[in-house]
Each structure stands twice: as structure tokens, then as C-alpha cells.
Amino acid sequence: MRINHALRIAAGVAALALAVTACGGGSSKSATQNAANGKLTIGIKFDQPGLGLLNKDGSHSGFDVDVATYVAGKLGVKPENITWKEAPSAQRETLIQNGQVDFIAATYSITDQRKQKVDFAGPYYIAGQSLLVRSDNTDITGPDSLNGNKKLCSVKGSTPAQYVKDHYAKEVQLQEYDTYSLCVEALKSGSVDAVTTDDIILRGYAAQSPGALKLVGQPFTTEKYGIGLKKGDTDSRGKINDAIQAMIDDGSWKAALEKEFGATGLQIPAPPQVDRY
Ligand code: GLU
Image 1 (spheres, protein in one colour):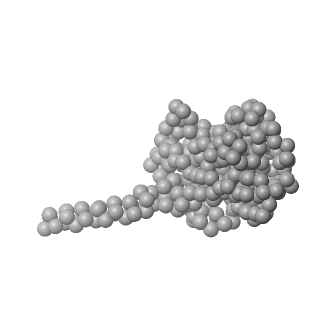
Image 2 (cartoon, rainbow, N blue to C red):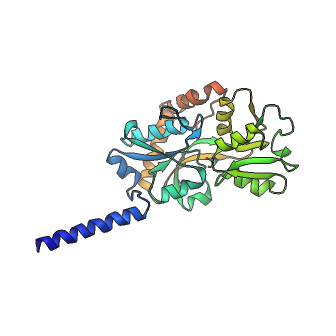
């Protein structure tokens, strides 16, 4: 009888383990529930200087990392208890839906299409799509010069790539890579004419290659950066919104932007209005 009981429990545990594995090893707990246990897994970019960068010493830096670390702190999680996970543009919704991350802070624009799959706290920054070219380029000066079959690089699953498809499909050749750092390499080597994504991202790359690359024209879209989290998790979203507001109110938001982008000449904008939809 006892053995039978133990066996049944063992079978139950095995079935549970299988179920967890089946959904990608992800957690079914909410961000705040995991935070209450002292740990968080947060999705960021690993290749975007000033925003989300994996450094040679294994540390992570950038404004997204600063925001995520601040939010984690407000949820009671110390920096050393954060697991950082790379969240490439095209994989963000899936990472959240599978529970592989608790939330994502990765230059992630809040859009109605994405809101069908995930929820967003924020916005915590407002960027705009722009263009990066080699410093000696004179024929690309802004979106109006996107013609003549020029080669433009952007990233799969990103809003800037979609914008080019929607507005300049016939005028330019769009090459979609997995990451912006690959686009920047292609730009430097001459295999594309321009990289397009948010101005703040391009600013980070331009600063990394002084004198070689330049941003041109004015931003031509509005990209509201949100913290993406599981759809329907209103408790976590409310707490993350409170944390973003606290970061703005106590000066840490401005200090983080100055630390990451001050040397690039960025005029720190007024903080955005946290949207409690
Ligand atoms: N903010 C845009 C987006 O969420 C572009 C940057 C990115 O791909 O991370 O798609």
C-alpha cells in the first residue's frame, strides 16, 4: 500500500516535470511571484551598446539593463539574482509567452499587434526610427532619399523593418538580419547602404565607431519602449509601472540616460507618461 502510494506520487512528479519541459522549461509563475522567491529572469539585448550589451567580462550594461535592474530592485530582487537572457527582436513575444523570461526590457516598442500576445508596462522611453550611414555617404539624408534601390538593413520581427516594408517596399531593397550588430557590420563592410532602427540604438553604434558612421535626418516614427510581460498579469504590470514611475521621480531615470548616452551628446528628453491602460 505504502509503496503503491509512493509510486503514484513519483509518477505524478514525473508527469509534472514532463509538462514543465514541454513548455520550454519556462516558469508558469508570474513575474511578481518569481520575484517573491528572490529571482528573476529578464530578457535584454546583448549587442546594443548603451542599451543592452554583454561585456567581455560577462557583465551586462546599458539603459535597458539599468531600467530592468531598478524594476527588479523594487520587486525585491538583488542584481546578483537576475538571470539575463538574450531576447532578439523576433523572439520576444515567444520568450514571454513560454515563460522563459519574467519580463523583457529590450528596446521593445509597445504596439497594438504585440499587445494581442503580451502586455506592456511603461513606456519608459520614447524613441523614433532613423537612419545610420557611413560618414562619407552623401546621398542618404533622411527617409525622403529612400529610393533608387538602395540596400537597407534592419532586423526580423522589428517595427522598423515592418515600416520599410509598408512604406518603401518598391523603392529600396530591405535585408533583414537577426540582430542590429550584424547590420552594422554589413554597413561598415559596404554590403548595405544604411541601417534603419530607433535613433537611440543607432546612436549607440555610432558612438562605438567614432568618425565612421553617422545618423541622418529626423526620426520618422514614434517608438514607445515598454517592459513586455505575460498577457493578463495585471498585478506585475501595475508593480512594474510603479517602479518605472519611481525611477523617473527619484532622478535615477535621468541619471541612467546621462551615464549611458551623455557622452554621445544626447539631449535628455522629458520622461514619458507611464500609461496605465
Ligand atoms: N523598437 C523597435 C522594435 O521593438 C526596434 C528595436 C528592436 O528591434 O529592438 O521592434
